[in-house]
Image (cartoon, rainbow, N blue to C red; front, side, top):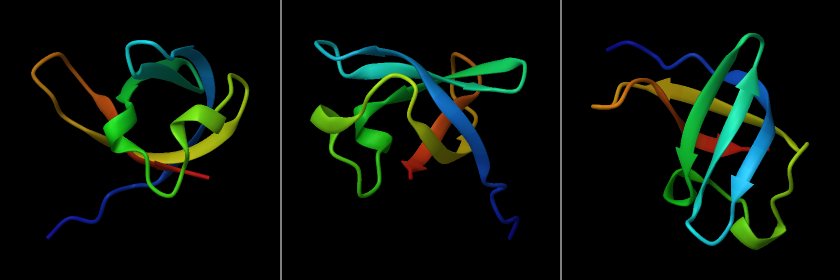
Length: 69
């Protein structure tokens, strides 16, 4: 079984009313949905926050999963 690589990035944009956002990591951006948060309160998350995450494949391309601080 392959272990997920944990990455660190910054919340670039949040679309609070729709429940998703984007994380900036180096030269890439990753979509994430609020359901992928672990031990984080969606209402307290802010643009500019540093988070850890791993990347999973989705039908629309790579996305952030297991988002935590």
